[in-house]
Image (cartoon, rainbow, N blue to C red; front, side, top):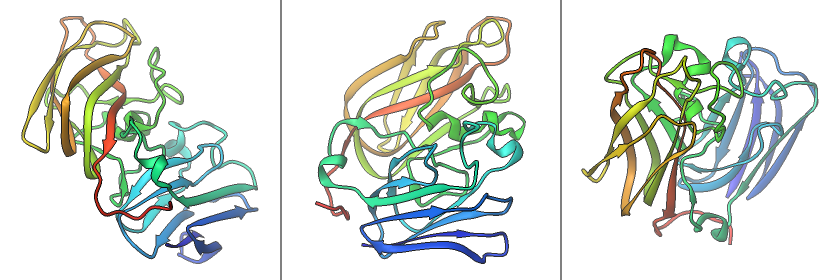
Length: 269
């Protein structure tokens, strides 16, 4: 598969570029400025790749259905990330077509450290009907960034998905293809007494099925296991908070475990 990674400025001028087949690296020896963005283009669709937009964020195994645009964050848009991310004047970007044995194992299918609101061709992808005050520290993407610290709230590493006190809050996790899952793990925010907690939540799946998960007041992960089901998305909804006085339940992380469903896809053997 042909790969092309570009760094563009706000006027869409190319600042750096790397091309290759199946695997490329790009070293960028300048500081980023507001308006910069990273573009990944491929010669095909439905490909699993190891993606690294920044060496401090590391690599993520993601599923691509098209080209990807990642907006380099600044100011309030980066307070949910480590202060080391996108800093300095030397950056290493990388992408490689994933190998079959890297894809087919049992793993967390929900983690994507590079998810952004506009990235609809890079999966997994999280969307929600609400985020507290529109602040980045409470953005839905925080729930799939792999960070499970949940004993505080606010800037990294305490970012979370905040529901803005809405009783009808919903988070949807899209996989971009059919996967087989059998376990969900939730890290709910546990900054007590500031936080409230959910007594139970409901999961709706793309196959039409539903599950209810009961929980306790705890900083420990909550786990539900179920017979394997093949889905392309799931939604957490109908979240019932406890009678504690705090109005602030929140989700630090959702993990969804399972395997790929074998079908035609682009991989590197």
